[in-house]
Length: 249
Image (cartoon, rainbow, N blue to C red; front, side, top):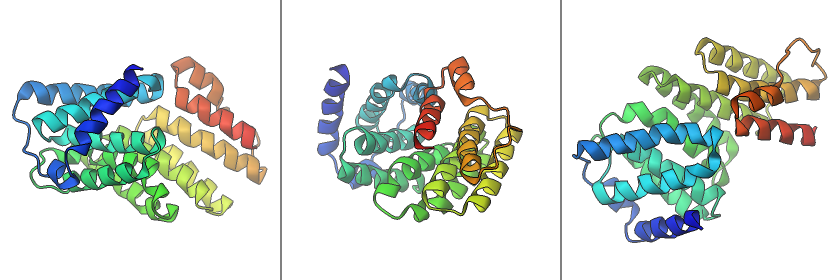
């Protein structure tokens, strides 16, 4: 009930403004608001994997704060995440598409400070969860590389790694030939290991196991036990991915 209450409140606030209104809102000046948005942004990244049911409430709070006080770099994450909720949770593709446009405008706005810090994360959200519902999935592949590069450039290696993880599953869905797909996933997993981004690496390795099973090349050399890892670190997303993969294969 609390989630639906805050959703309706946020939805009403968004109905009162256009995409251009949001993109041209003044920049936040209050340092307390900026810090609060930054804290919620950091929490959002953690709860997505550990406690997904908390995610909508944080997103609603961030969107409401942005509409009331104006934009900053965290607003890119707020509106991108709200687009994801509209698309995946509330089945409203039109509003999801509008907020992706808003996110893109903010990412390319010269007025938004420190936008490079969030570009990789915002692109990963938009292209992983929204864009492929509105355009061919092939068109999402190149932006994941751009997001990966943006993450490396800004030092946001976590977002860079998740762009590779998202590209992995989209390559699978786009019908990339299995030998080429296996080679690319192995490269991605190696990169994530070098970046010390174990969660994204585990997501890629889970996809890689599926590819190896389809090719009948799973010789047991990779001792990766995704279920055990998911149980150990409470990563709900990895557990769900493995369960789905086992059902499909």
